[in-house]
Image (tube, rainbow, N blue to C red; front, side, top):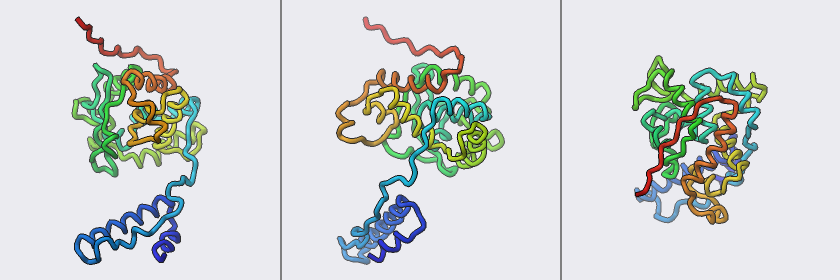
Amino acid sequence: MAVEKWLRDLPLAPNSRANARSIMHLIFKCAERWELIEIGKNPIALVRVKGCTKRLTTPRVLTAVEFGGLLPYLKEPYRTMVIVAQCLGLRVSEIVALQWGDFDFHNLTLLVQRSIVHGRMGAVKTEYARDFVPLDPQLASVLQDWRQRAPFKEETGWLFANPRTGRPYHQEEIQKKPLKKAAIAAGIGSKIGWHTFRHTYRSWLDATGAPLKVQQELMRHASITTTMNVYGRAMPNIKREANSKVVSMVLKKEKREPIAAAPKAVSS
């Protein structure tokens, strides 16, 4: 009860208080392993944190008009980063960790396989997050255009690297300055972040009528509810169609010559 009261009084969001409780639980688990306390007597196992699964604020979701109005106020490479975020729903830690070798422009796929948080490279968030995602021809054209101007074009080069350091940009600094300024200039307001595009991507997928199982796989989430799971595993062409509808919403004003998809093998 004393621990629960201490957690309630912390000036933190419920989810942060839950994280503090988890750390304490892990510490006592170590104490059990080291036989400092009796095994099976972890006192933190009884501690509860109320409201840790509830959001304090409703996630911001942009309209197609708002997103289109944001792009003119963003310089490169931030503009292309935002387009990638909205077209694919990637986490920003995954976007800054992208290398040209992750893309298969012939087969129009992208392998999401690493992330960078606070300048440190590591694995993606979960095993389900490491996956191939479809690459729409329109988005492939945008990326090929950026590659012509990018400071590093080799296969192992970072898509979005600081030309002075050769290292990926820090996403926190981009959100605080260029992204926030562009949002204010576009009349969207300052309460916008990288995760706004991921929330918007999910919302736009829903608007396309994409099956819930397809949405789960495109978002690369570990699980969905039992009702969502009845849709079964999405076939690649269904995933491509759902993703392409979102890309069309993002790039509807872009006049580009799309890159042709890889020809299908002809059976004998």
